Length: 167
Image (cartoon, rainbow, N blue to C red; front, side):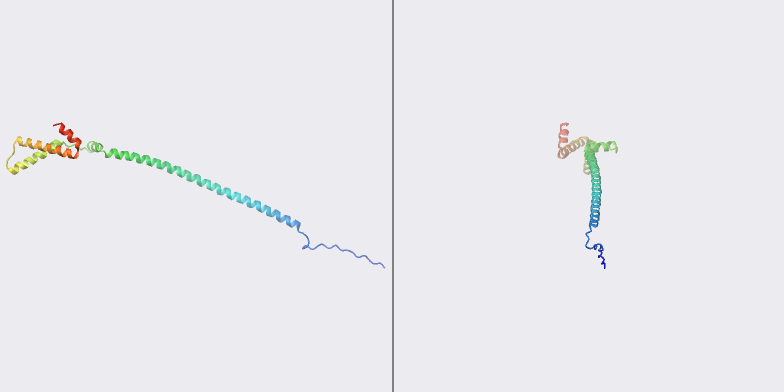
């Protein structure tokens, strides 16, 4: 008899036992692509952030220059106003404005002092019951002029010297 040879049947190895070389390659490629995409996204985000910071810095620099120019303009205006104030507060300027713009006139001091002395002499004469002579009135005027000079020498020393030299 004939005995048949035993046939060998090819069996595929189990999946568990077989190395997964192709799957390893696919996952490493996916990881590499993911890392590259992540790096590109990070660089793009950094670029946007850097650009926005540059824009903010430029904007603040522009504002700073505007404020510096405004400060300079205000300092110049302040100096002009101080100069105007100084010139307007001088006594000569006040007198000029009073005479020219307001129509005032400078009082005549000798007339005013004479009027005061004359009225004082009249009151004194009225109280004594006599009219007073012209000589008495002249004497009163001289006395009031001396009082005026003394008053002016007390408050305005330069003016009293000029007045006393003119007698």
